[in-house]
Length: 602
Image 1: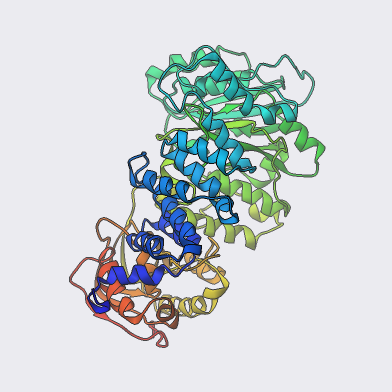
Image 2: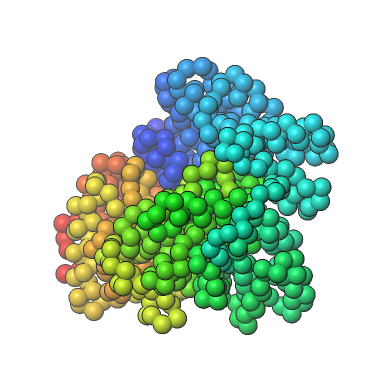
């Protein structure tokens, strides 16, 4: 096949394949771009020997985080199997071994993962988590495990617990799942100390809530109250809620008449709390008996820190650490424990149904101008239940995130930055204060809106040094349009070549959005627009919708030096204009191609 006879997407793949594999993996994961997946496949099939393993592992990882072929016979399973066969004992192999072992476990190839773990040893924290899964008798077989196999697994799980001097994990005899059987017996009691108010929100409670409640009852810190805030569950759940309250006199049920979401209800619980310290616990998680004791001592002894968080790990229902989103350990926003004065000074959580706890954590950090540390126990004191029905599992994975969350984070980061160190200016209570900035529909858990605009810009809004000159020109154009009372919007699309782009938008672009001078539109929101301006043509390669969302009369594709350096001109005019653009815009528009030097708003 001649060069000119090749399909334009194939030529785009060849051009993109020159990018670093990790950059392409993140772009494929964030966008599910067919062009980027093709680029990874092309790189894997044509890479020179010194880069062959890098390219193959990158392609396998992209399939895994996209959830494609997560079976031994599936595409991800085949690719990780091939990568395992190529791993040797050189430096390149050791760099990839954790990724390949994780991929083999994700695709249920446990025997090969064990063989690889023995052949190419790893000493990282992730390797320690993987080994726990490799001996977990509930994962590798559907048969009832023996007591010896369970004891061997728990012994490995509890290595960090023993090192930290805290009670090891055990399994109760009863429970719907392995996760529900978690326990850690402790006879220790701390009777003297301040009252800690724990808020747990729930809706249509089931056995998972009981697991969470019982783990709170088992706390060594005795002076606590648990406010179980019911988010308007139907009447048939009231008896079950009362049975949970009857488990301990320190549990109080607060019933609400309308469904408002976890963050609104958490804020309601804090208003009703009587404790000197405030925290929360998710209703489907399990906490170690030492959670409150260790976290409270950390906050008091490390004074003057404003709050503390917990290290957590996601665990599947069968007790596994590895899942399609990846095995990881991190500090969890919802585990914040703070003195009541912090809450009184900065206000409470926003009403957003999602990610409001992340905003609240960053608000505290901005006010006190310091990072909130995690309690230093190396063993996780909270286990997050990883199940497919959870909202976080639907929207997040190891590298994927709906663009609405990026937009929300960019907005609150800018709002915090302008008020850094000013507690009064950072105080916010959604019940009395006006909205601070536009909030995307995905964060509000609302249906995607429809937009009617005069001009819509498609661009990569991420901030980075390489993009700064182009962003300045684009902001000038958008401001000129807004000054003329033209209804203008921006739609974020991710370029496949920005290696170290920040999630936030440049401050001047974010200011236009925050003040309402322009509208930020998500890729999955319907738009009717007179003129669509594709300001970053290469970003269209990240658009992978099943059906177009934009109705436009005129489409203008701006030719820029950056695009011409990234992709050959034939790709800019064919792969982007014909193939990638078709994923975004309905047919029937007129097409123009102005130069970047022209101010489009003039």
